[in-house]
Amino acid sequence: MDRITAGEGQRQPSAVEQGRVRYRRTQNRRSVLISVGSTLVFAVLVWLALTASPGWEQVRASFFDPQVAWESLPTVLVGLWTNIQVLAIAVVGVAVLGSLLAIARTLRGPLFTPVRILAGAYTDIFRGVPLLLVLYLVGFGIPGLDIFGRMPAQFWGAIALVLCYSAYVAEVLRAGIEAVHPSQRLAARSLGLGYAKTLRLVVMPQAVRKVTPALMNDFVSMQKDVGLISVLGAVDAIRSAQILVASSYNFTPYVVAGVLFILLSLPMIRLTDWYSARARRREQIGGTV
Amino acid sequence: MTANEPVLRVEGVVKWYGEQPVLDGIDLDVARHEVVVLIGASGSGKSTLLKTVNLLERVDDGQIFLAGDDITDPRVNADRVRARIGVVFQHYNLFPHMSVLDNVTLAGRHVLGWSRPRAEARGRELLERIGLGDRAAEYPDRLSGGQQQRVAIARALATEPELLLLDEITSALDPQLVGEVLDLVGELKAAGSTILMATHEMSFARRVADRVVFLQNGRLVEQGTPEQIFDAPQHEETRRFLARLG
Ligand SMILES: Nc1ncnc2c1ncn2[C@@H]1O[C@H](COP(=O)(O)OP(=O)(O)OP(=O)(O)O)[C@@H](O)[C@H]1O
Ligand SMILES: [Mg+2]
Image (cartoon, rainbow over the protein chains, first blue to last red):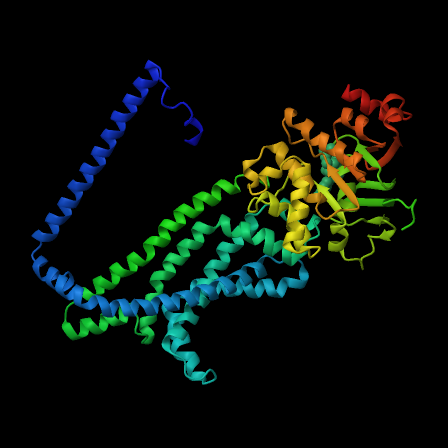
């Protein structure tokens, strides 16, 4: 765009170009109208089906009560803050453990065979076990060992999240590491960088950029799975909503919690799009061998 | 190191890939400030020789000395040796996630342990020298192929290497970009760099080389001044290779 600013005022497109521009404009306008129209029709149909259903009045009263929603908001928000704190800690843990596992799986040579196998077994196991189960085992099992003293439920929740998500993230990172062209390693090594520095300064940054969308997807899914720590009794958004529901017999607080979780994830989703588009432009060169 | 000791001495180097000898007893010296050009058909072992010198490939026999130090000794620290040698490949292999300046300062900061100001001063000086002083903050994908290859050369020079290895650094470039890269090599020679390079650009080899080395099937067939090799080759194989090029 910035390239054709000079003299843009005077530029007089030919009749052919004007015709093309006119045609494209009408085409665009038509597409927009069609999509807006079909969305509206669909929304109206869903609305009609919902409100015409026999139980609608009851559902609306117990799930979408504005009064209850407004009153429950502060409590659920406080709970959500707990989720955010656990999430922040777990993300750091996942970044560290996930990277270590990924690197362990890419080590070559017979010396590292045991490390490689252990890391492989770990990722296989923790990608297979349901998070809920890990939460129970970690949250109720490990405290029973009585070696860590008394830790809050949030702590065990964070541990369980780290254990599970590290396995996913390790696999994603490993794919990224393997996607960095060998010539990049070669270039780094021939500058005199050692194995670890090559990994840290050249391979990992590129690997992470290559898999940023996948990593961010994992992050978004972690953002909602952090709500599962409520099963350990941590008073988070969901648990707070549950308490409110139990005392008022109205389910609206759950909907409030749901909406808050969606709002929490939206910035991250937008950021993912923006960031990966930018990274893609940069990655288009290099390693063409 | 004594004054007349070669920067690089290759003695009886042998390299096998499987059943096939790729380097079959190579002996070669490169003196200080000398530019030695390797020529030979595709597959003759030029790249392999350069890789063994940079310890990217392990030799199967023979020895390589860098300024008198046996670098094929398994006890040497390969990373230290590589830091003393600058390498530029056919494909520029710049680090795409770093600015041009960071590409050039990486080795200084993380291999030689220079402070950031010192590495950047050196980096900017080099970028100035290759005519890209104003592009320091740019990412490599914003540069042309020729500019990228010049940055790759600057990156290789950043640690003030004793020896520069260039492996067909122009063969991935559009013809009109070849000149600017070769001109830079000419300037390096004028500034006294010691260079061992492989190339298919015979006219350039003639212009810049102090000595031309012809390899065939992993053997050093013939070496001499550009005039000797290009105008009066002694060996039948050399004559045939040059005749094929036309
Ligand atoms: N990693 C490898 N594994 C097996 N064989 C290899 C390997 N690298 C090179 N070779 C073989 O070694 C021989 C020499 O290769 P080399 O790359 O040194 O040739 P070159 O002279 O650089 O050729 P070109 O002019 O095409 O670059 C070739 O026959 C090649 O097939
Ligand atoms: Mg080659």
